[in-house]
Amino acid sequence: MGRRRSKPKAYATIQSVQEDVTGSRTLVVITFSNGNKFRLLVDCGMYQGSVEEYAKNGSLGFINAELIDAVLLTHAHVDHSGQIPLLYANGANCNVYMSQDTKRICIPLLENTCQIFAQDNNPMYNENDLNRAIHAFETIEYDEWVELKNLMNMPSGVSVKFIRNEHIPGAASICVQVSPENEESFRLMFSGDYNMSNAFSNRITTMPEDIKKNPIAFFMMEATYGRKTKKNMVVGKFENDVEKYIGMGKSIIVTAFANMRMQNCLYLLRQMQDKGTLSTDIPIYIDGGMGEALTNIWPILNTVDIKDFLPQNFHRASTDKKKLIDSEGQFILVTTSGMGNFGPSKEYLSMAISKDNMVIYFSGYVSNESTARRIIDAKLGDILDVNGAIKEKRAISDYTEEMSAHARAEDLQSFIEQFHCIRTLVWNHGSNTSKLAMKERSDKMENVDVSTINDGKIAFKVDKDGLVKEFTIVSIPVEKSISKQPKRAPKRNKKCKTTRRNKRATGY
Ligand SMILES: [Zn+2]
Ligand SMILES: [Zn+2]
Image (cartoon, rainbow, N blue to C red; front, side):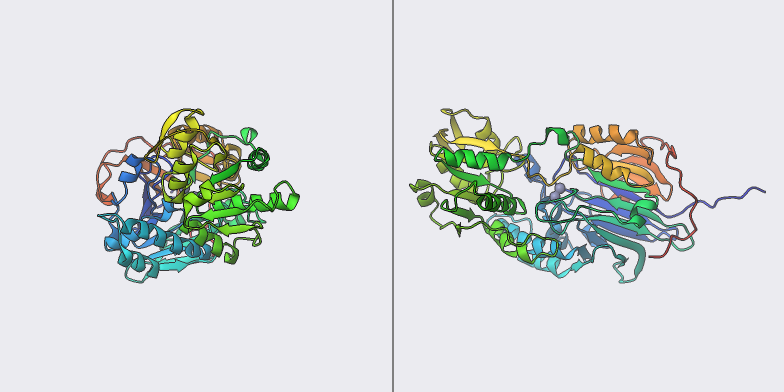
């Protein structure tokens, strides 16, 4: 009699309605053979960029907050963390797991977001919701398996390992291991935002052997820069530009994201001072509540190795913004928000745009509908609307993308290639063209059985052998949100051959 393989019973459904980069949130519902469910939410971020994107905030969509057993936070960027308090405004009763540094960064960041909301007529969440959320923050050490408890405070059969990732300080890629009783365990992996290295770290992102060697049933991987290659990467532009514009007698307003970009700009200015390419006579100012708060805590973060990064002749800008803009002497100001739509940069840009002794410099990603985009696209002499001020553009504008915190296509590819066996790979967090560009690469990989993209409309059902079905998401909540008919029959190519493993996974 042939050996009959018992059918695996435990499975997971994974769904994320994220279509592009912002608004990261992925619901994972693990169903055990006895019918018990464990509901995990990986990240709960805000939509950002255009007005249309921003309008999607304030709703949890397919997520029933009361049913969530645990939230896993990959890192502190607002587009991954900014809606966590909304879960508590909607009755969540679970822990939010994150690394220590993510907690340190996330608290001031959410407090700041909450303060901004407080000015709204109909705020998304209030201080009470925020406090309840912060109370639920649990820190997890990197590289240690932690078994999660369910809402009844019972062991869940679901364990997680946070793996340090150099995207920003505190960032993690997360491995989820499902260990049903008397069944083979399986793993799900969530890259979070990924970068190999960053300016403040002496390390490169390194996956533990155990994570690389064991098969991964489902892998959700970011693809932000799936179409950008390292070949086309400009390095050193910021320093060259600062030297050039200061040499021309201009003052420079650098807009930067509060979390890491502002600190990165300051560190580059410091390095220029150390090299002698920037005179310490030029005062350097910062302006932006959250940016300042994060700059202050930066040296105490465990994952920041470069603690001494502030330039000389460094000051907090006075509250009189006009006085600084009208001042005679040269200066450099680093201010938030990065795209010029919000915060102090909104005011500075509307004043500086008509001054021919100014350079407006954008230090990162610029979305199509942003103030930054309009300024970059305008020619000198054009009349344009800068945050409500109709002015002639007389200031020079310039930008660099070199400080991006996301890996380029080749690095995304080699990150995936280091795993021995990925049953289902889903490219997420990027434009469709970026995700498809990465899928084209992963389709050729020997270690990947099935690769696909998340277009925000599909839910994936996986078991220990990988993809079982793809479903079209039709309504909420998740258990009822998937149509009866599979959209596509799964193809289990089994390209990656792994030896049959023991019934239970190796100890952790
Ligand atoms: Zn991020
Ligand atoms: Zn992100």
